[in-house]
Length: 455
Ligand SMILES: Cc1ncc(COP(=O)(O)O)c(C=O)c1O
Figure 1 (cartoon, protein in one colour):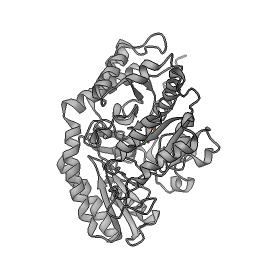
Figure 2 (cartoon, rainbow, N blue to C red):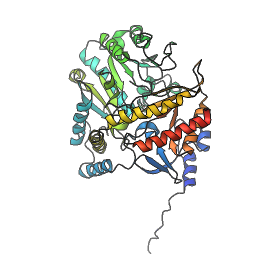
Figure 3 (tube, protein in one colour):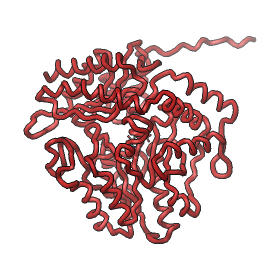
């Protein structure tokens, strides 16, 4: 008796949306939002355009919302590199062996990272990269012996560092920390430079440090308050995502670095969003010539093609370590390493960091034309990462209601362009490969939506 061949039917778009309501837990969205059709089910894409299962096509100005897809969709060179690597060696082990390609990647990243940053730990995500940074700091203090009990981490109000235990405890954005409290002990936070709505009431001309960098000096007070001998590390997003692209005032990063050095606190820069050219330099700290003790990265490291995160430490930390106990079965997976090497070849070969600076300056100029609207409080940006910060009242700088921002985002989507609301702001972070024509088309449609809704 023969076996009947059953044709597998692909699910229809409406079946997929129904399964997405019933069988998938959407982070950050309420059941109502999901049922109301907020999430999109993506099916395919190429270049800067992506299509949903319903066949609608969008110009993606957000690099797939998380800003990971720095090289856009359908990048053949990365897909091929991954395929070739899997055929040659699909896995290299963890503690006692590793794939050649993973070591090659470590050296490549060390060559791009600022100054003395030199030795990598590979993990699967940005969250894990930050966990690795916290662990490296503790192992360092323990091995070095000057502050063997140091375990505390100071982070900042409004920064985000990820979804794992320590990274969540360090986070103050996207609502991830509070539901998990009491979380990992030893984490505390200080105010951060928030342009347009300075936590100390300064920043009337944007965040220009006219206050004498009070938020940087706060770090010293917090270290003294927590006990310098117990403070292991300080972590920040050099350019924070909260309320959109918070560029630190001149001197801020230098000041916090000095304070960390004074109290022997490991300075960690989280470059998970900003790494690999997004802001017009390889890493955002390069804009200020500041070298952290540890830097973390993910997202654009593989341009979103395969999950990979990394923490890179300076020589002093590398040399002090007396064994580093942190095992990830898939840390530095060869397929991810091959994807990262291919992505870096493209960033380098096509001069994408410099291109991001140039196209970003053009985008910022276009977006600044919206500043004639009362509802637009400030337009900020660096490289291909920009934000329009909206206000209900320019005198008080109160944010516009979230529903109004959502209406702008959804009108922009109706016009065929993807942007994303982030607190009081709407963000634009297109793939770094975007051409001038597409950039102008996308920004033009977004500006049209803004003027229709709050003009
Ligand atoms: C600045 C920053 N750090 C860390 C993370 C966590 O990265 P992942 O989601 O890859 O764990 C994110 C994710 O959005 C991030 O934006």
